[in-house]
Structures are given as C-alpha cells and as structure tokens.
Length: 121
Image (cartoon, rainbow, N blue to C red; front, side, top):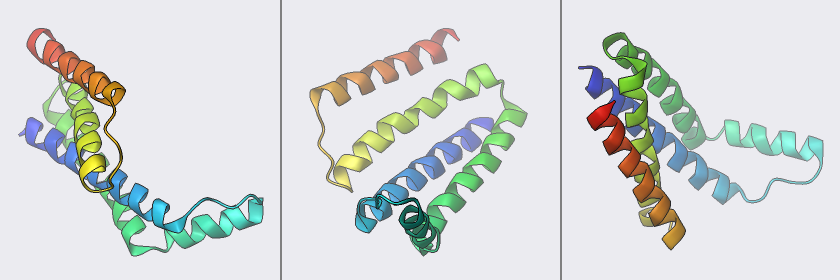
C-alpha cells in the first residue's frame, strides 16, 4: 500500500504543477511594483484552478505521510523523481512546451537513477 501512496503523491504533485503553470501563464507576467505583485498574487490565490493546485499539493503531502508510514524514506523518495518524467511529458502535451534534447537527456538520466536506486537501493 505504501507504493500506492507514493503514486498518489506523484500524481497529485504533477497535477498541481501543471495547473499552477497553466493559470500563471494565463495571468501573464508579474508586475514590477511590490504592491502590484501582491495584487497579482492575491488574484491568483482566489482563482479556483490555483486553489485546486494548492489543494493537490496539500493532499500530496498527506499521501506522502501515509507512504512514509509504510516505507523507508530511502525506498520511497527516489520514486518521487518520476514526477520529473510526467511533468516533462504533460507540459509538452498539455501546455505545448518544447521538448529539447537537453530535457530528454536529463529526464533519461533521472529515469536511469530511479532504476539504479530501485534495483540496488
């Protein structure tokens, strides 16, 4: 069951990151002045999509605590790196972000690290 909680943690984290990037992208660049930045952030915080992303982050934290109650940190934590793979894939598919050779190579290295840690960790 611990691995299920890790998977839930990863999926909620990926959802939260994608939703936050989507909504921040729609909101545009943050203004220059401190007061304007504060208004910009408050508007984002009142956005239901942003709230769902923050809620997903909170739920991911709860799921992570449940995962850690079942698994050692050294076993569970490397699996969270799979979020890099999912964010890369979904940011390209959903947000239209470019996939570069450097991003693909870096992600391949992360996957290799996950495999090594899972096999010999």
